[in-house]
Length: 110
Image (cartoon, rainbow, N blue to C red; front, side, top):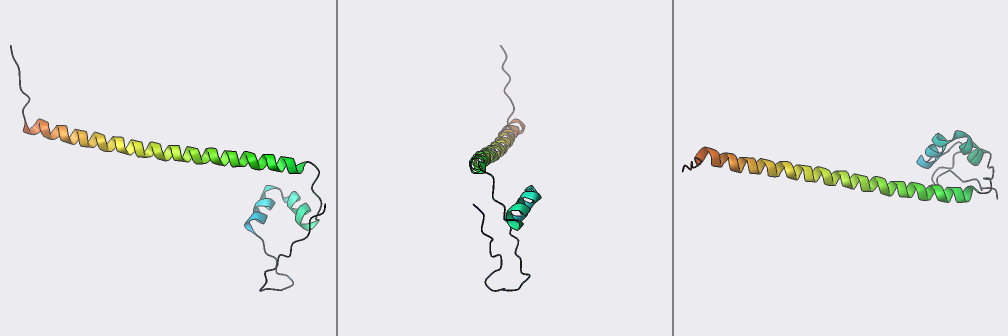
């Protein structure tokens, strides 16, 4: 099944040399220039079996993205907890330091 060539000209420009390159096109070219050339210029069919590999790869990348997002949430939570701990430590230290200087510690003797 051969891919149909895309009309890459926007509706407002009908120039002969108007070629638009999307971010997806740049990513495809950067990943594999030969595959990009075969798909976009030569319009060659993809080999059989690439559909299932594409689905598996997409699922793998989606799962990886979820793991990365989870790790980012964990790091943010750790930073917030660390900041809370530092604030509590400073408040505790300030409360006890003030008590030491203003009130003497009682000395008990038997």
